[in-house]
Length: 362
Image (cartoon, rainbow, N blue to C red; front, side, top):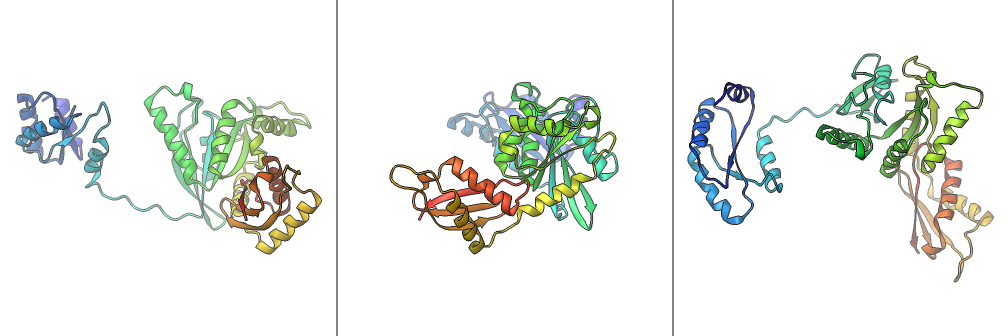
């Protein structure tokens, strides 16, 4: 064995010893097994290239190495790898449960739009590495912040690139962790580079947030780099709405993580969106409201009749979901449901949250 191999065994908590199941035992396997037994380290004996049933019977020969039960896998085809990993981590100590928090906030956006700078600004210290080099953050960084007696968990994520630009395996992993952070959060802060404007990748990330039905706030960062006049604020938002028409319900603001301009608004707005997620409309009030709306503007007439709502209720919150018991769901097309959605939002809020309206036949 080489000196590097000895050092690797000495530093390891668990050693995966992989042998070639298609070639049978070798003197090299015996030699390595002797060193592994003497090391006293936990060893998971892994027999690779075992794709077929008859090869599994031959794997029994490896019991002679004295390293316990051989685990048959095919790394090429992914067979048995999951069971192998379960065996590797079986004796790992269980980490402490994360402290409870009142809200989880994920900061998302393209690479180098200032996500880590915003996290550092909010917590008041350099919690995340900041660099002008895009892609500095590789993993999701969890930081707890105590704010007005509440515990907020901030999650800085790796920038999401276009799939065609994701080349390294580590970037694939980073993207997966970013998507997982989105699934875990209550509210997402979508950061857009105001100096570059809204681009296609911003729309794709917004689509992930919308599909996940998370609360959302849009932050246009690097406002200090934008040439401004009296109409600039509105132009920036209108451009965003053209590129991302499905996220126009999101509250938005401009800021500069560098100069700290308007950074104090972030947590206040995020908390407001979070509180709006749990709003519930009383059933009788909702029915009275919809009756009035539909009296003023009923669904379009279709062949066979017109739409009628017999009963409505808010079935869920976080995100809010309203169910309409109707005479025929086909009478309620997407445009009319969008109209009802806008009317409900205007009357009751649900700021920064997607509202689901579902129809079912009465």
